[in-house]
Image 1 (cartoon, rainbow, N blue to C red):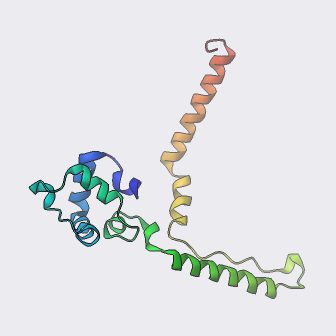
Image 2: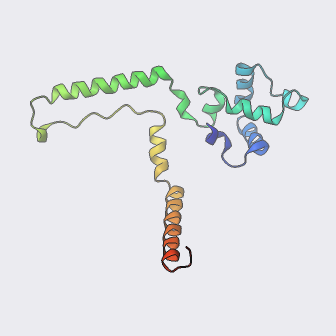
Image 3: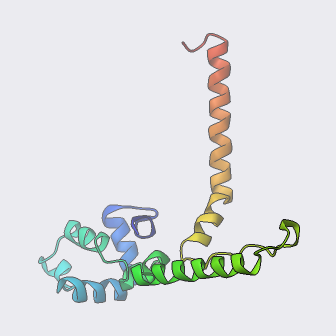
Length: 154
C-alpha cells in the first residue's frame, strides 16, 4: 500500500495529492477506523505527520487502499484459502482423469485460480520502465568492468 499511496511526492505533498484524489475515502476511513475527523487536520487536532501515520496503517480492506488501486487488500485469508482449495481439487481431478494415460496423451495441468496481485506483478516485471532501468544497470556494470580492466578503477 505504501507504494500506491506515496508514488511521486512524499510527506505533506503526497498527502495533499492523496486527499485531492481520494479525500472522501480517506475521510471515511479515518472516521471508521480511528474515530478521527479529517477536519481535525485544519483545526489543530491532527498533524500532517499523524495523518500520514494513520493513512499508512489503514487495514488492507480500507476504502483508501481500494481507491488507490491496491487490489491485494480485496482478498482476505478466507478467499486465499478457498482459492487454494479449488486449486488442489482441480489438480486432484486432473490426476485422476490422466491416471493410466500415456504422458503424450494427457491433458494439460489445470491453471491456478487468479489471485488479485499476480497479474500486476507479471505485467510490472516487463514494463518499459523496468526494462530501461535493467538495461541502464547492465550498461553501468559493463562500464565498470571495462574501467577495472583498464586500470582506471582499483
